[in-house]
Every structure is written in C-alpha cells, then in structure tokens.
Image 1 (cartoon, rainbow, N blue to C red):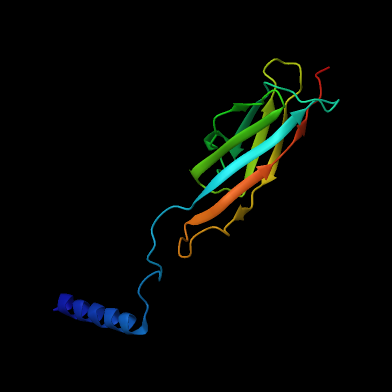
Image 2: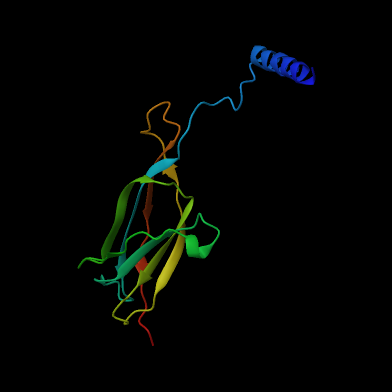
Length: 147
C-alpha cells in the first residue's frame, strides 16, 4: 500500500515538473571545453643578442597540486632566439600558464613568468559552446649570465 502511494506521488511530481518546464539542468550538452593554444617569443641576452638552444617549457596552472600540473613538451630556441610552443589543438583551456626558460649549458640564469591567456572566440561556429576559441601568448625574455 505504502509503495503504491509513493509511486503515485512521484508520478504527480514528475508530471508537475514536466508541465512547468523543469527538466533537469536545462542544457543537453556533454563534453569537455577545448581550445587551440600557441605561445611564441624571443630570448635575448643582456646585449639584446638572440640566444639559441635555450629550453622553453610550458606548464598549466589549472591544477592546485603542483605535482599534477601538466607539462608540455619542451622546445628550444632557434639561431634567431625564437621559440614556438604549439599550436596545440584540443587543448584544455587554462586562464594562466607558466613559461619556464632554462639554459641547459649553464651560462644563463633560468627565468619564468606566469602569463594570462585570453581566448578569441570570434571564429568559433555558433552553437559550439565547448570550443573556447584560440589562445595566443607572445612572451619575450632577456636572460642574464650566471655570476
């Protein structure tokens, strides 16, 4: 008897919610936000001369635990001191990233910076709510020699 009453009450509540248009979260999308991301820049010494073979690493700042932060494959500067990280397609959009510069030869002191990333949605198709657009960062570094 009790089960029949509860089933009836549940049916009435479901009917009322349906009539009022309350059908759960209201959005029928499932997925993960994604974007395209690229970081570029130039690395020079104190005399503004380009420095080649400097390692540049990108780390996300999204994860609260530093050990769980995602590190992207390192790139090295060319003979003009320029580096290009990416573009990464399908990248999980983060609002800020760390760019870490390391001289593996040991001549220059390491450097790093946290950069804010803004995403351009101007070329995103209407209705593609998971696509956050394209993120682009230009960050130059001037390295100092170790003493």
